[in-house]
Length: 220
Image (cartoon, rainbow, N blue to C red; front, top):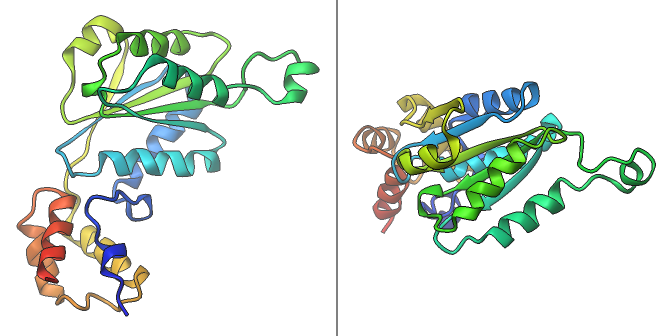
């Protein structure tokens, strides 16, 4: 029996069905090769920014990169960020005792969603201090609907920021993603939808979430 809730659920980002993997892999490779890299993921609500960060968080360890995922928003505090970061960059017992390391040697990738809503300015001051820490190979990926000029002006001025604009991928890529979702939920092919119906919905939508919402509505 097809579990509709599992394969659709437009409000539950799932890195297993991420469609912007090429862009995400480039971020990981640059984080490995460089230091203090700044990336900014941009795009409409529902285009896949949170899924992008979740994918990086899940697959960064495969690349020997230490991810730190933080959900932004108005309630995010410096203490929350500091606790997560300091715990993540703490070296192993062996490195601390015998090599006298203060931080881990692996590249670190800090992932922050919904940065446009962060109110505590100390969060950004702390992030910059870590990017500038010579002992630490840290890069940061910020995500928001649009670029936040105040953040650049107050904290990132003079830094190179690579902007990653997420857009709707080609129809065939989205068709394949939908097929995989259906099969992961126990379905087959594009059933209970017709292949043409899925294509029409994709072509009439402007975000990935909109596609999933329309498919969900079609089941009712």
